[in-house]
Length: 497
Image (cartoon, rainbow, N blue to C red):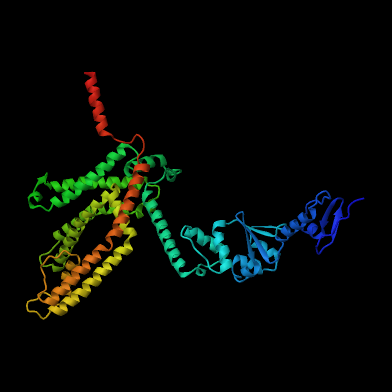
């Protein structure tokens, strides 16, 4: 005779299939208890423990959350306090179908909501539902943390003021670093990639010409052209300076000044170099917008504009009547414009930035620190206006003073704030000297403020540009190695003899 099974303490009937006993609730929910065996003395206790452990998953007042493989249990009443959040919407939503839209997956057997999110960040969100305060740790990535709390529908204002201010500082610093990295990457990637020439007309030939005039590390001829470009820039600047010397102005060759011959040779080289870049580039719009290419265009335009103006001035001078005052004024204005155009040739020295890492780093530093530079000029302007007004108010009654008006005192204030101090204008009274001392002290403090910021930025950008040029720019077999080759030739000659 079989042993009689004692009914468990459940609210539903017990059904027995052979030697196995199951609850109707368990059958409905798809969960089965362990098999009942009369030979085990503690079977009843084990069944009760298993039943209690299963009841934990079906507690209607507890939300079972599986976040990235880690289990969290949140009280529904605690989650319902924040109905706008994702978990609060799950706790307050009565429609099971709408709940499934708020999670990635759902387990019916365990009554468990699955979310494919970062469990590390969710620990702080779990603590938020328990305490009502969102804590932030410095080790967390600001961008990842913001993305996670936006997914869970929690606002950053739930954090304390101290944590929020520090977090926002880290977030702003990270955004600025990302922006700088993007700008620096764009600065480093100034050469066209090979894929940009694919499918273009004469793409292979244009790529070779582009590397020849743009990428000095592509081949030995490209290095030679880069050296010649820098050499012609220096020659052009030196020629422009020597052309102002009276003794050299009358040094002619075939009726034309020697300086003009050198200028023509430099312009021919610069024009040829620019046309080769323009014809070989894969993107003309980007080429015309690049700062270095604009500098190249400015370097050659003054020469051709000068020729055009000289042609117009000659025609105006030929048809000039002695009584025609208006035409004489026009010729004088053309002469002034021509002097300004000749002065623009000084910008050719900026062409050295194409092959100088230091100049590129300096320009990049100024672009990235334009806010600090603008603040510096603003403070200088404020100091000039303030101390010039003070100096005029205490010195204008002194006989023979140079501070007759506030605009007259601007030069003294600018020189004093810059700590140059020419001594051409000095105060005579004791109050004037006190104002001068305060002005100089203000200049010392003001000049020392941005130096550390600008220098640190410059050194950082210079190191990154230098590292990029040394690692990615140099190719194997493109080094000239002039000294090594000369020594090899000498050894070969000595060995043959």
